[in-house]
Image (cartoon, rainbow, N blue to C red; front, side):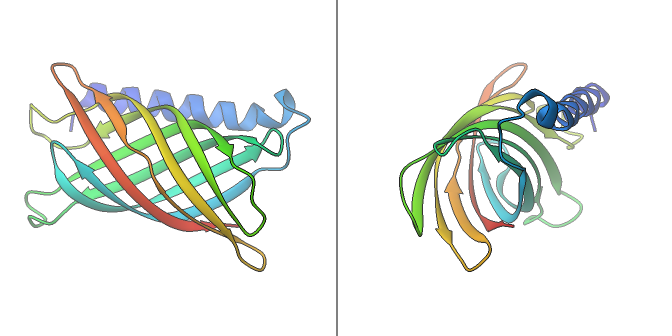
Length: 171
């Protein structure tokens, strides 16, 4: 595990939590935050296929635009525990929702980080830029979402790509 990567990740998470806490005070006109949880599969150019979970907090600025903070943990465990690596990937996003009543699509984009816990010296980690598309479907009291949100990971010596597919529920 890279100590500098962990420190960068913790710094980013601290920043995101401070941003989330100040959300109410800075954007008084925004709606109350909504929380979501989901299942995450991640196809990485470096690690292959991983499985994990993701949490999201979002708040609508208006009917079309929302801000979101996400935190995902993905394990690349298909080669067994001894060769497993884990990725923590926080993201901050703007989400533009297309018109719809029971179903709607949305575009999202933003910045994040890709923190790889692998001890390998060539493990890809660094800041990320993501742009994706998703769909929501209204349920009785919650909302089902599914999305693809590819990210470009800017590593120290190389650039990689991560392509996640997520499905979950917004409470």
